[in-house]
Length: 128
Image (cartoon, rainbow, N blue to C red; front, side, top):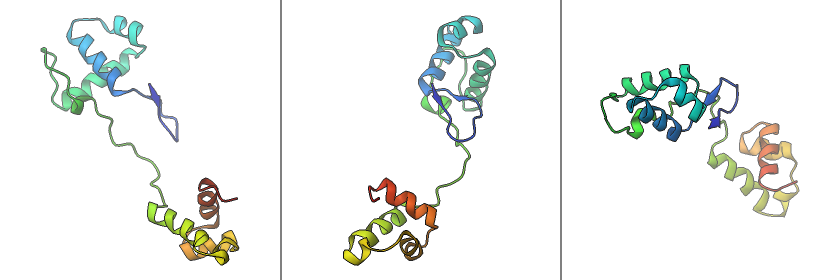
């Protein structure tokens, strides 16, 4: 099971675990037995079945498809820095000696980023 990132809104169950829940349920297993085996609470099992039914799954021996258990689009703060801007920061530093001597403030200004974002990008790229 993979936990969500950012604000903790409970757990995000892996698709394989959701498939197992649906399969065991379609075989006639009880919710308690499924919870005991997989650790998925009964309320979560009901929600997994509800979403799968909305996506076209039926209990009558149907194969569970990826679309029945796929993760929904999660909300969250979008990334401000695209890979082009990320590359731009690295290019500014590595293009010549003058680039290596520029302060984080100047690099941030030239790349159109905040100072803290430029500093984070430089740190993750291995520049101190």
